[in-house]
Image (cartoon, rainbow, N blue to C red; front, side, top):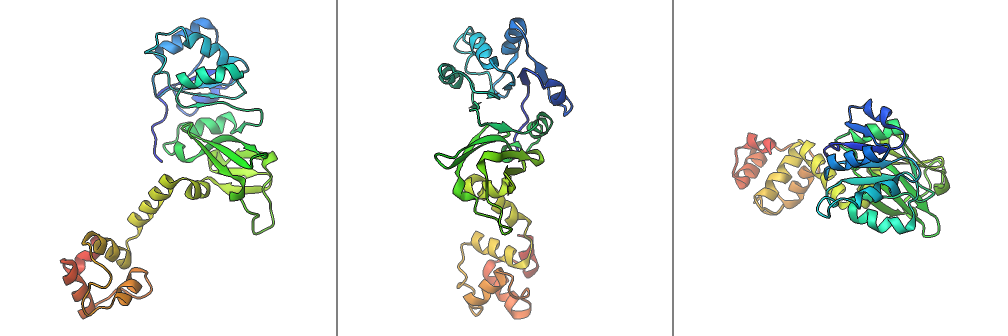
Length: 272
Protein backbone atom coordinates (compact mmCIF):
# COMPACT_ATOMS: atom_id res chain seq x y z
CA UNK A 1 0.00 0.00 0.00
CA UNK A 2 1.30 3.45 -0.85
CA UNK A 3 1.62 5.49 2.32
CA UNK A 4 3.29 8.82 2.90
CA UNK A 5 6.61 8.60 4.68
CA UNK A 6 6.57 10.04 8.22
CA UNK A 7 7.04 13.79 8.18
CA UNK A 8 9.44 13.52 11.12
CA UNK A 9 11.38 10.82 12.97
CA UNK A 10 12.41 11.35 16.57
CA UNK A 11 15.02 8.86 17.76
CA UNK A 12 15.60 8.38 21.47
CA UNK A 13 18.91 6.53 21.38
CA UNK A 14 21.48 5.58 18.72
CA UNK A 15 20.77 5.18 15.02
CA UNK A 16 19.81 8.64 13.77
CA UNK A 17 22.86 9.03 11.50
CA UNK A 18 21.97 5.91 9.53
CA UNK A 19 18.37 7.06 9.22
CA UNK A 20 19.50 10.35 7.71
CA UNK A 21 21.20 8.53 4.82
CA UNK A 22 17.80 7.82 3.31
CA UNK A 23 16.65 11.41 3.29
CA UNK A 24 14.38 11.03 6.28
CA UNK A 25 13.88 14.08 8.43
CA UNK A 26 15.26 12.52 11.59
CA UNK A 27 16.28 14.12 14.88
CA UNK A 28 18.24 12.62 17.74
CA UNK A 29 16.54 13.32 21.04
CA UNK A 30 18.70 13.31 24.17
CA UNK A 31 18.16 15.14 27.41
CA UNK A 32 15.13 16.90 28.80
CA UNK A 33 15.48 20.12 26.77
CA UNK A 34 15.79 18.23 23.50
CA UNK A 35 12.80 16.05 24.38
CA UNK A 36 10.60 19.02 25.28
CA UNK A 37 11.49 20.70 21.98
CA UNK A 38 10.72 17.52 20.02
CA UNK A 39 7.33 17.15 21.68
CA UNK A 40 6.53 20.72 20.65
CA UNK A 41 7.39 19.94 17.01
CA UNK A 42 5.61 16.56 16.77
CA UNK A 43 2.59 16.00 14.55
CA UNK A 44 0.16 13.06 14.10
CA UNK A 45 2.26 11.76 11.19
CA UNK A 46 5.51 11.71 13.19
CA UNK A 47 7.18 8.51 14.38
CA UNK A 48 9.07 8.14 17.64
CA UNK A 49 11.67 5.37 17.97
CA UNK A 50 12.92 4.45 21.44
CA UNK A 51 16.13 2.56 20.70
CA UNK A 52 17.63 2.64 24.19
CA UNK A 53 16.42 1.14 27.44
CA UNK A 54 14.30 3.47 29.54
CA UNK A 55 13.67 5.93 26.70
CA UNK A 56 9.93 5.20 26.61
CA UNK A 57 9.60 6.17 30.27
CA UNK A 58 11.45 9.44 29.65
CA UNK A 59 9.14 10.17 26.72
CA UNK A 60 6.02 9.33 28.72
CA UNK A 61 7.07 11.51 31.65
CA UNK A 62 7.51 14.60 29.46
CA UNK A 63 4.46 13.89 27.27
CA UNK A 64 2.23 13.81 30.36
CA UNK A 65 3.26 17.40 31.09
CA UNK A 66 1.59 18.57 27.89
CA UNK A 67 -2.00 19.88 27.77
CA UNK A 68 -4.50 17.08 27.08
CA UNK A 69 -5.32 18.41 23.59
CA UNK A 70 -1.64 18.09 22.58
CA UNK A 71 -1.14 14.60 23.96
CA UNK A 72 -3.32 13.04 21.26
CA UNK A 73 -1.38 14.51 18.33
CA UNK A 74 2.14 13.19 18.83
CA UNK A 75 2.31 10.40 16.22
CA UNK A 76 3.29 6.75 16.48
CA UNK A 77 5.81 5.10 18.80
CA UNK A 78 8.04 2.05 18.31
CA UNK A 79 10.08 0.84 21.26
CA UNK A 80 12.94 -1.63 20.84
CA UNK A 81 12.73 -3.01 24.38
CA UNK A 82 9.94 -3.96 26.76
CA UNK A 83 8.45 -0.96 28.58
CA UNK A 84 7.43 -1.26 32.19
CA UNK A 85 3.96 -2.86 32.46
CA UNK A 86 2.65 0.24 34.25
CA UNK A 87 3.63 2.49 31.33
CA UNK A 88 2.05 0.45 28.54
CA UNK A 89 -1.50 1.77 28.91
CA UNK A 90 -0.65 5.49 29.13
CA UNK A 91 1.76 5.17 26.20
CA UNK A 92 -0.98 3.44 24.22
CA UNK A 93 -3.37 6.28 25.09
CA UNK A 94 -0.96 8.92 23.81
CA UNK A 95 0.75 7.39 20.78
CA UNK A 96 -1.12 6.00 17.78
CA UNK A 97 -0.02 3.50 16.69
CA UNK A 98 2.03 2.24 19.62
CA UNK A 99 4.23 -0.84 19.14
CA UNK A 100 6.03 -2.11 22.18
CA UNK A 101 8.46 -4.96 22.14
CA UNK A 102 8.49 -8.03 24.35
CA UNK A 103 11.84 -9.66 25.01
CA UNK A 104 11.45 -11.89 21.93
CA UNK A 105 10.97 -8.93 19.56
CA UNK A 106 13.37 -8.73 16.63
CA UNK A 107 13.56 -6.15 13.87
CA UNK A 108 15.37 -5.11 10.73
CA UNK A 109 18.82 -3.55 11.00
CA UNK A 110 18.56 0.22 11.34
CA UNK A 111 19.75 0.80 7.73
CA UNK A 112 17.03 -1.43 6.30
CA UNK A 113 14.48 -0.05 8.73
CA UNK A 114 15.20 3.46 7.47
CA UNK A 115 14.79 2.32 3.86
CA UNK A 116 11.39 0.81 4.66
CA UNK A 117 10.18 3.91 6.48
CA UNK A 118 11.09 6.00 3.42
CA UNK A 119 9.30 3.60 1.04
CA UNK A 120 5.83 4.49 -0.24
CA UNK A 121 4.98 0.79 0.15
CA UNK A 122 6.00 0.68 3.80
CA UNK A 123 2.55 -0.51 4.86
CA UNK A 124 3.13 -3.70 2.87
CA UNK A 125 6.57 -4.43 4.35
CA UNK A 126 7.50 -5.91 7.73
CA UNK A 127 10.00 -4.19 10.02
CA UNK A 128 9.85 -6.60 12.97
CA UNK A 129 7.79 -8.88 15.12
CA UNK A 130 7.76 -11.70 17.64
CA UNK A 131 6.55 -15.27 17.93
CA UNK A 132 4.47 -16.75 20.73
CA UNK A 133 5.09 -20.53 20.63
CA UNK A 134 2.68 -21.14 23.51
CA UNK A 135 -0.26 -19.73 21.54
CA UNK A 136 1.24 -20.64 18.16
CA UNK A 137 1.00 -17.11 16.83
CA UNK A 138 3.31 -14.73 15.00
CA UNK A 139 2.85 -10.98 15.37
CA UNK A 140 4.30 -8.88 12.57
CA UNK A 141 4.82 -5.10 12.53
CA UNK A 142 4.49 -3.23 9.24
CA UNK A 143 6.45 -0.20 8.15
CA UNK A 144 3.55 2.07 9.08
CA UNK A 145 3.49 0.44 12.57
CA UNK A 146 0.27 -1.47 12.00
CA UNK A 147 0.35 -4.96 13.49
CA UNK A 148 -0.77 -8.24 11.97
CA UNK A 149 -1.08 -11.47 13.97
CA UNK A 150 -1.21 -14.78 12.10
CA UNK A 151 -1.21 -18.44 13.19
CA UNK A 152 2.06 -20.31 12.84
CA UNK A 153 0.05 -22.98 11.02
CA UNK A 154 0.09 -20.58 8.07
CA UNK A 155 3.64 -21.74 7.37
CA UNK A 156 3.62 -25.40 6.28
CA UNK A 157 6.91 -27.20 5.54
CA UNK A 158 8.41 -26.10 2.22
CA UNK A 159 8.84 -28.32 -0.79
CA UNK A 160 12.50 -28.79 0.15
CA UNK A 161 11.57 -30.00 3.62
CA UNK A 162 12.40 -26.81 5.54
CA UNK A 163 10.19 -26.40 8.61
CA UNK A 164 9.53 -23.02 10.27
CA UNK A 165 11.50 -22.39 13.46
CA UNK A 166 9.85 -19.46 15.33
CA UNK A 167 12.75 -19.32 17.81
CA UNK A 168 14.98 -18.09 14.95
CA UNK A 169 12.70 -15.33 13.67
CA UNK A 170 14.40 -12.71 11.49
CA UNK A 171 13.51 -10.05 8.92
CA UNK A 172 15.50 -9.46 5.73
CA UNK A 173 15.37 -7.95 2.25
CA UNK A 174 14.19 -4.57 3.53
CA UNK A 175 11.01 -6.01 4.95
CA UNK A 176 10.12 -8.24 1.99
CA UNK A 177 11.07 -11.52 3.67
CA UNK A 178 10.22 -13.12 7.01
CA UNK A 179 12.61 -15.87 8.10
CA UNK A 180 11.79 -18.61 10.58
CA UNK A 181 15.17 -20.30 10.77
CA UNK A 182 15.99 -21.70 7.32
CA UNK A 183 12.36 -21.26 6.31
CA UNK A 184 11.50 -18.12 4.32
CA UNK A 185 8.12 -16.52 3.65
CA UNK A 186 7.49 -13.56 1.34
CA UNK A 187 5.75 -10.57 2.90
CA UNK A 188 3.30 -10.29 0.02
CA UNK A 189 2.37 -13.98 0.35
CA UNK A 190 1.60 -13.52 4.05
CA UNK A 191 -0.44 -10.38 3.40
CA UNK A 192 -2.31 -12.02 0.51
CA UNK A 193 -3.55 -14.74 2.83
CA UNK A 194 -4.08 -12.72 6.01
CA UNK A 195 -5.11 -9.22 4.90
CA UNK A 196 -8.32 -8.90 2.82
CA UNK A 197 -7.51 -5.29 1.90
CA UNK A 198 -4.09 -6.24 0.50
CA UNK A 199 -5.62 -9.15 -1.40
CA UNK A 200 -8.31 -6.90 -2.88
CA UNK A 201 -5.74 -4.30 -3.98
CA UNK A 202 -3.48 -6.92 -5.55
CA UNK A 203 -6.32 -8.51 -7.49
CA UNK A 204 -7.51 -5.10 -8.67
CA UNK A 205 -4.00 -4.32 -9.88
CA UNK A 206 -3.77 -7.61 -11.73
CA UNK A 207 -7.10 -6.99 -13.40
CA UNK A 208 -6.01 -3.50 -14.44
CA UNK A 209 -2.79 -4.89 -15.93
CA UNK A 210 -4.53 -7.73 -17.77
CA UNK A 211 -5.30 -6.34 -21.21
CA UNK A 212 -6.10 -9.61 -23.00
CA UNK A 213 -9.28 -9.69 -25.04
CA UNK A 214 -10.88 -12.10 -22.57
CA UNK A 215 -10.15 -9.89 -19.57
CA UNK A 216 -11.46 -6.81 -21.38
CA UNK A 217 -14.57 -8.71 -22.43
CA UNK A 218 -15.28 -9.79 -18.88
CA UNK A 219 -14.84 -6.25 -17.47
CA UNK A 220 -17.15 -4.79 -20.09
CA UNK A 221 -19.72 -7.57 -19.65
CA UNK A 222 -19.84 -6.94 -15.89
CA UNK A 223 -20.07 -3.20 -16.54
CA UNK A 224 -23.08 -3.79 -18.83
CA UNK A 225 -24.62 -6.11 -16.21
CA UNK A 226 -24.77 -8.99 -18.66
CA UNK A 227 -24.49 -12.70 -17.93
CA UNK A 228 -22.37 -15.06 -20.01
CA UNK A 229 -25.63 -16.48 -21.39
CA UNK A 230 -26.89 -13.09 -22.66
CA UNK A 231 -25.04 -13.14 -26.01
CA UNK A 232 -27.70 -14.65 -28.25
CA UNK A 233 -26.29 -17.22 -30.66
CA UNK A 234 -22.90 -17.15 -28.92
CA UNK A 235 -23.19 -19.70 -26.11
CA UNK A 236 -22.35 -19.04 -22.46
CA UNK A 237 -19.73 -21.78 -22.72
CA UNK A 238 -18.00 -19.94 -25.56
CA UNK A 239 -18.06 -16.63 -23.71
CA UNK A 240 -16.60 -18.33 -20.63
CA UNK A 241 -13.78 -19.91 -22.67
CA UNK A 242 -12.96 -16.55 -24.29
CA UNK A 243 -12.86 -14.79 -20.92
CA UNK A 244 -10.56 -17.46 -19.48
CA UNK A 245 -8.20 -17.15 -22.44
CA UNK A 246 -8.77 -20.77 -23.47
CA UNK A 247 -9.49 -19.80 -27.05
CA UNK A 248 -8.31 -17.15 -29.49
CA UNK A 249 -10.01 -13.78 -29.64
CA UNK A 250 -13.23 -14.08 -31.67
CA UNK A 251 -13.58 -12.60 -35.13
CA UNK A 252 -16.15 -12.33 -37.88
CA UNK A 253 -19.79 -12.89 -36.99
CA UNK A 254 -19.00 -14.03 -33.41
CA UNK A 255 -17.15 -10.81 -32.67
CA UNK A 256 -19.93 -8.71 -34.22
CA UNK A 257 -22.60 -10.43 -32.11
CA UNK A 258 -20.60 -9.91 -28.92
CA UNK A 259 -19.97 -6.24 -29.71
CA UNK A 260 -23.63 -5.65 -30.54
CA UNK A 261 -24.74 -7.13 -27.22
CA UNK A 262 -22.19 -4.95 -25.42
CA UNK A 263 -23.32 -1.87 -27.40
CA UNK A 264 -19.82 -1.00 -28.62
CA UNK A 265 -17.86 -1.25 -31.84
CA UNK A 266 -15.86 -4.52 -32.09
CA UNK A 267 -12.50 -2.71 -31.89
CA UNK A 268 -13.57 -0.90 -28.71
CA UNK A 269 -13.79 -4.02 -26.55
CA UNK A 270 -10.03 -4.17 -25.93
CA UNK A 271 -10.07 -0.61 -24.58
CA UNK A 272 -11.90 -1.72 -21.43
